[in-house]
Image 1: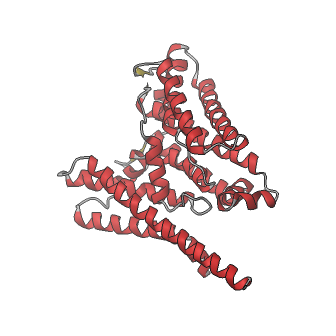
Image 2: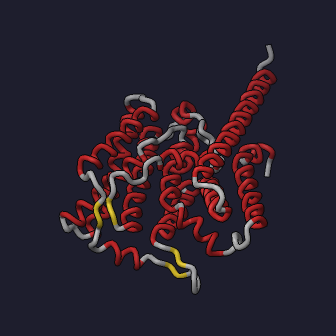
Image 3: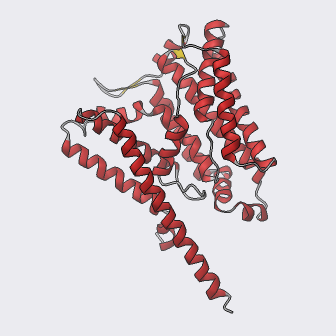
Amino acid sequence: MTFRALQRNVPFLATATVCVLLYVAASLRYSGFASLPVFVNFFGDNAFLGIAAIGMTFVILSGGIDLSVGGLAALITVLCGVLIEKQNLHPALCIPLLLLVGILFGTAMGAVIHFFALPPFLVTLAGMFLARGLAYALQLESIQIKHYLDSIEGALHLRLGPSIELRAAPVIFLSVFVVAVWIVHWTRLGRNVYAIGGNEQSAVLMGLPVARTKVAIYALSGLCSAIVGIVYSLDTLSANPNALGGLELDAIAAVVIGGTLLSGGVGFVAGTMVGLLILGIIQSAIAFDGRLNSWWTRIAIGFLLLVFILLQKLIQAKKFRTARTFQTTAHPR
């Protein structure tokens, strides 16, 4: 590995190191923490967040942000409940329709962001309010979904041993993760995402399809949000407009802790997975301890997030100094 490649991978290496240290420390401190069922639960307990964070990774890699994730996922759960429970629509028709809604919602935001040159923060904030508001307009209270979904959830169960099972949520999450890794590393879209995040003006000068790629990125994030909403309905057999509040903030935290730079261009989907594991380790360690309430998870995540943001700032400052030194050397006065 060259020095430049090593420098680009510093955030991911830092994340992986923190993850290993936390896991070893928790395993030594708490009996049974290193068992396979506990490790499997890391994925089961954070499946919704994991799927949302994968979509968020693409957005942040491109230098953008998406605050509509939680609201859109809640809207999808409500639409799922209304279509299946009240309209008696079969999931074979309902699920593709819901995925299409997520894609179109993300596509619309991406188009507004690019063609009107508006800040992604403001556009997706408006999308968050719009989606959550539509969810409440359609259904004010939670409703149970009694048709079809229980059989689908049961069919997606995976038994890994006598006492270890993966529910539908982690199975879908791991499937989305594999597809996302393939898109990032082995497709033209993935290469374009890195190029835009590194320097959008350079990507334009290189003739890359910047407009199409940016719209596709937000469409992909909308698709992931739709998957979250569907998986939530599968897992809980319910539709709730209050569901998944703050999901977008947790997703951003997982992506940043996973080593993806907020400025874009540097990061990995695998890093987001490691960031998610860190959150799972912290949650499980606090549960094993038994003396601390769940809010300590937020405190620990906040501390780690601050540390990784400071690390990103140091890396960016060093890159800027290196670039200035190169320019001075190449073009002396």
